[in-house]
Image 1 (cartoon, rainbow, N blue to C red):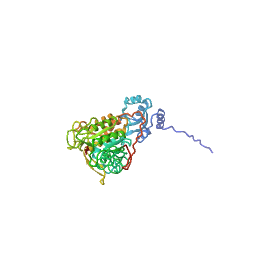
Image 2 (cartoon, helix red, strand yellow; image 1 turned 120 degrees about the vertical axis):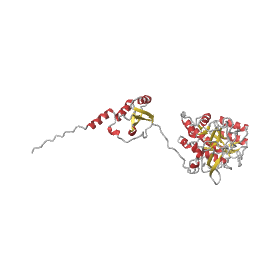
Image 3 (cartoon, rainbow, N blue to C red; image 1 turned 90 degrees about the horizontal axis):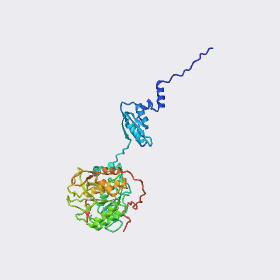
Image 4 (tube, rainbow, N blue to C red; image 1 turned 180 degrees about the vertical axis):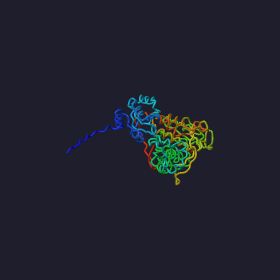
Length: 427
């Protein structure tokens, strides 16, 4: 039997296979790659986005990247864009090459955005003041830290208030000369809530969500306190870790001892914020009118001063003056109005800045507060914008890390504490 020899002839590769091999040797992505799903940078960091002319071919785009020295890590073909990394040590030259390539429309850093944060606290919808100063946008940058201390020099603070549990440090009561600065009025607790109420599924959200409160009781049950008590309280706060002192109290006459205490605190790097008062007057009220104090008037939701708010060239800032906030007693949250409740919005913003950039000087923080405003008639600088203020701080380069002292204060959830040894609330 004759067997016919069958020659097994290897067929020539299709043209597209040869093209694929040639492109692979040249380092140019294949046709198949051009149809891959859109993809971003993924977990890669320090990436750049290069956008090409719509009439540029995929291969021309790849050539532009290759010629520049960049490396493609992803692409979004629907947008004629590639995500690339730059060779170490040649970043500037590579960017310059890409930006001067006629096939390239733009080159931008593949920067990041953050989730827009909104509190889950049930009374957040009532907090028009926090929304007016754009606190939620500020919280995308920082929510504060528990190393940043806001001293509330007031009627005391109730550490059992649900929004303040675990956030109240050991303080001092100058009215009774003991270590139990319990609030027997409600005013100080309400102020503390505006400044720093926690996000915890109850109540409200304060401006500096993670900051802690240093309670210093200088006012009595009726909301009145002597100059000497107030001065001693300011000095105590400055010596016990306060980054910011909130003074939601006011009187028509200057006191030398209170003025000296404020100077002492500022010389120790503390930002001092005080209420302008609620008399609807242009006359100076103190301690807000003392040099260096950030004086605060009260504005409504239309960015106009409330008619009861003090005003004038001696008043530096304004902030929303009515707050739904926590207090003492069976009704845990209610409305409070007055410059007393505008002041902790500014104090809380100062605390956000200090949390983000603890190395900033007092004067730097004060300048950021005074230049981060929306214009309002009746005050020198305008209404505070917390987001602008935090952004100014965020733009300051981080310094070389240096060791910092360990805070001596520790939070307590009970009114008992241990520590060292007439004005009225402004709201």
